[in-house]
Length: 54
Image (cartoon, rainbow, N blue to C red):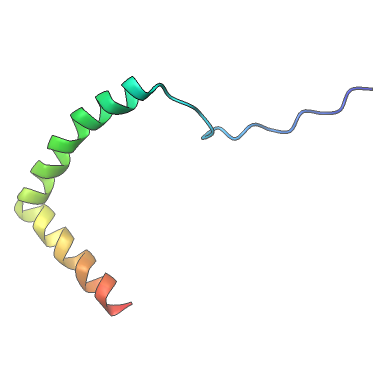
């Protein structure tokens, strides 16, 4: 009798380095834009306050 397969972790995926780098090239400018905005700066200040209080 065959042993049942263990469920595979859906997040256990290997991506080619070229895809990771392409995504990073897309994402980095978007992150910079967010943190340059008023909303991003406010979010960062709130995160800093929480981080410093813990």
